[in-house]
Length: 358
Length: 278
Image (tube, rainbow over all chains, first blue to last red; front, top):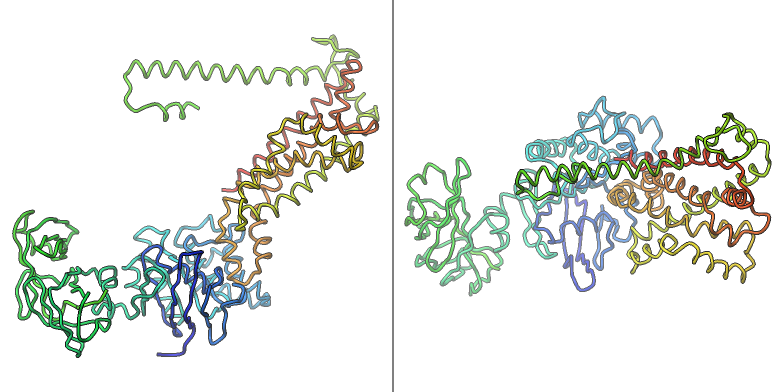
C-alpha cells in the first residue's frame, strides 16, 4: 500500500472498570476510506474521539504522519471532522462556517476567500454562501459540514455517522457524494458507522469492532467472502453459524467438516488452529443457500418456520434438526411453493461455507 | 388551553360526557378571564389616577391633567431615589452574569461530582423567605461592617439576582449541543476560544434576558433595603413605601405608571430574546 498516514498502536481507553478500547492496532494509508463498523458500544466512536483528541487514551499512542499526537489538544492535531448532527455554527453563514478553520489558522483574507469559494463550488453550494444553516436542507447542511472539515486541508478526515440523521433516499445520495468526493480529492478518511450497507458502499477497507477490539480488518469483499471469525460472519456477512460434529483442519487453509450428517471440505479461516478444530463453527451466508443440489454441497433438511417477503427476494427461516433456525435469502420466484410447515432441502454449494473460530 | 383539555381527555367518552367537557371548558375559560381582569384592575386604576389633576387621592378625580408627572419631575427626591436604584441594579445584573456564566460551564461541561446539587444550591435565594434571608444577611453585615453601605446593598440584591440569572441561562445552555464546541476545537480553536466564540456567543440572548430580569429583581427590591439600608439610602421602592407611609401623595401613581410601563417593556424584551432562538 501507499504512504502511512495514521498509525494507532496498542491504544487503550478505560472508564473506571470498563475497557472501551482494548489494545487497538490500526494503520490508515493515504487516500483510503477506512470504515469502523460495529454495533453500538463496540468502541468505534471512542476510537474516533481518541483520534480527534476529545478523549485522552489510557495507554498506547496515535501517530499522524509519524508525529505522536496522543497528548495534543484537538486544535493542534490537524484533523478534520464531520459530526453526526452536522454541528454547524448556527450564528455563522455558510461561508463563515466553511472558513472557520482557515480563520483560526490566520490564513490571509484573500486566500481564505479563494479556498471557501473553491469549497462552495466543489460541494455545489454556490449562491448559498450568505445563508444561515437553518435556511438549508439536510443534504446541504451535510455538505457544509464536509466543507468545513475539508477547507483547511487536514491530514485526515474523521466522520462520525455523518448520514445517521438523514432519511434513506438522501442517505443513498450522500453516500455517492462522499464516495465521489473522496475519489476526487484523494482524502484520507476514517468513517464510523453501524450500518453494514453504508460500510459496503463506501469503504476501501473495513475494521469491524466488538467490545473495544478490532475483530476483523480487510476489504469489504474479503471480509464478506472470507470472514475471519464467527462474529464477523454473522454481523457483517449475514451468515448462519452452524454447529459442527467434527472438524479437522488440514493445514492448507481448508478443513474436513461433518455437519448435519454431511461431510464436506471447506475453507478454514486462519484463526482456526491447524490440528484440532475445537470450538469452530461453520459460517454459511444466507444468500449462498440454494434449493438445488450440486457436487460437494452441504445439505440441510428442515421445515419452513418463517417466510418474509422483501420484494424480489424472500427470507426463509428453516428449522433444522440439531442445528436450530437456519435463515436463507432466496429469489422469490424460487419459493412460490413454500408454506409454513412444508419440508425443504437447502444446499450450500462447495466453496461457500467457511469454518471459523469464535 | 382548550387544546390541552382536549388532548388530556381519555379517548373513550360518550356524547354526554363530551358536552359536559365543553361546559367545563367554558366555565374554566370564564374563570381565567375573570382572574386576569381582576389582576388588571389595580394597575389600570393606578394608571388612570396618575392623570388626575388633584393634590389628594380622590376617585374618580374631579379634574384631569399631568400634575402628578410635573411634580415628579420637579421634586429632586424622586430623581435621586431612581438614580440609586439604577446604581445598585446595574452592577447587580453585571455581577450576576459574571458569576453565573462561568458557573454554568462547571454545571454543564465538567465532570465535577455533585454539580447538579451545586446548581440546585444556587437557587437557594429564590426559595428562602426574603424576610428571613434579610435577617440572616443583617447578622452577617453587622459583623462585617457592610450594614448601610452601597456595596452591601449590591451584595444582598445579588443573592436574589443570581438564581434568576441561573434559571434563565441554564436551560438555554442545555439546548446548545456540546458538539458545536468540539467542532470548533477540531477546526483549530482552543477550548476557551470555542467557549467564547461559539457557546457564549449563542448563549448571549439568554444572558441578556437574564440580565434584564436580574436588573428588575434588584430594581424592585423593597425588603432588603428596609433591613439593610442606611438612613440616606433611599431607593425607589423605599421612597414609594415611605411616601405612602407618611401621607398619601398622588405622585406615587405617576411613578407606578412609569414603573409598570418600564417593567412590561423589559419583560417583553426578555421573553423575545429567549424565544427567538429556535
